[in-house]
Length: 381
Image (cartoon, rainbow, N blue to C red):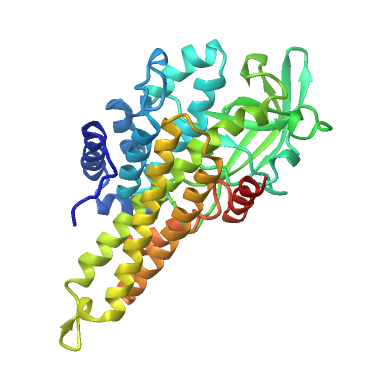
């Protein structure tokens, strides 16, 4: 089935085609399965993205970047996720969650020394916000940073931190004024090799090539220059990045929907039952119709939001809608794809893996319940 673009430029189509060719070469199905079984980070694919300049994509030209538009980034992430959700998470934890904080809010040392290292693939990053007591109410985090002269001493615990086990630096949200609510939170750039940092990989259902982690901070010394932005501005620094994060999570889910429909269709068109191709049965045909409607709706919302962002708008409600619909539809499409394939889909393989991968979508990056709160507030304010 021909790929449907949504007013993509020739440059954006080039991005899509190049990334799919590149990643399918680096991550053929048998390699993905081997990495998944070993819970291994897709190091070689990540290195290729760095070598080919793709880690520079979202940054301003004066920072050595390519100044990609929001729609460029959505096209890129959709293509990346179409090949493998794990490499998408690997890219986003370093380039988006970590790197964009350096680019937007970092001091000269972060922007002039660390960001070039990241763009060249020599610096991996992660961001640590969620804690055992909760992840949605960020203002109530318990991780503390107390002053020590010009420096800080960090203590606390984070959980479900994607790719912390391979990161060199982690952006950590911590309370520097425990009595000031969201205004008492700061962002610290923590060296994972620092004394007192203990990172322990966890055992998730899916996304086995980009593992979540527990992190323990035991009186970790943080240099004064490792504060991102100003002390007490952590909340303010995090909020502007939410539109981009939600857009790209929606794009990733849309890419996974495309792959699931393709895999299920390829299987179903060769399968016979009761002397007929199973695609001739209305029950099967309707499942594919539902899968396609969900996929197209996800993509429509994703690229509409990208265009709004590129036009300079602040589409908080729309990005929340895109993220919620795309991640929930991704899970539904994966479930229907598995149902179409029956026992073959239930056995460990591409569809089972994509089903497991999809389950985190309505949880991570702001749960569907929190997204509905955001949508309602924007609508009713």
